[in-house]
Image 1 (tube, one colour):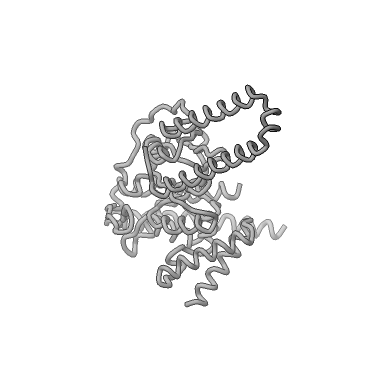
Image 2 (cartoon, rainbow over the protein chains, first blue to last red; image 1 turned 60 degrees about the vertical axis):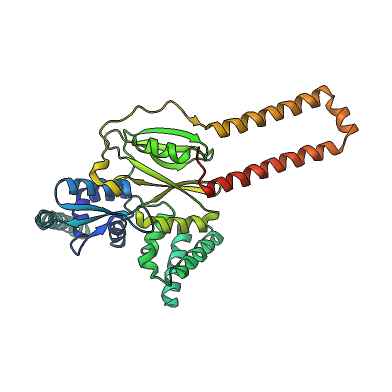
Length: 116
Length: 249
């Protein structure tokens, strides 16, 4: 139940998190997944991550480029576009506003429960 | 540097044991990964594998973010090592994602008609948990995830979008295949020959009266047993050699 709830929360914000992983420069799927896992957001499999990257690419928020590698078949690198950066700034504000409302409500509820 | 590595592998070992992996298996995995790191000229383990707790979760297949969709189709099928990669990639291209191999060696696949992706597959050889962990670590940077192992070989999957991006989208779904066993000509011929030899042996024994035959030729039991063991070992090593060479039909 806790995992399902966490999964639902993440689905709503995963595109923002992926965009945020690209603000420092280009990256690729494994590095993005590793960064999100390192931030405590769980192990995000390719079947979840790449549809998000595809949607962001189709929306023009990121640009993907495949580069062959000497060691293996190669990787697709992603870079944030101007539109992506603007969308990230806009939607981060909206998410933080939502987060604040949720936190305030739950904090107030916890205080009330604690008092009774 | 060695202290950093030791701390990393201590944390990895603790996380693996906490997930229920036996202590000897954990020790083997840690030893294999430490050797892999040494081969990589002492690379940073966090850079190479990720945080130890997250890497342990990947190795044990835990904590996936998205669960299976409720309307997903499932399909189980099997083939032989001479046709597996071709068929996996053929059906992966139709949206079939291998979730695991079951005890019978069948690929357990799922496909969500509402959100299907194209998948691609590769196969690697690995003897034991430690080598499987090492192969997983080697292939992970290119988005390959383990999706099952059987005997001494293991399979990896990744969405085709990992290389092709949105161009790998799946527009139309082929019907779910009716087949569940898809052996190629080579394996079918081996099965037919083995069956015929077994039939000939049984008929010969019955016609010559089994009890009398064995009483007259007690060494025959040892010959039959030795032939069976030799055939089994030959098949095992032949298969292993063909997997290593990547032989396909």
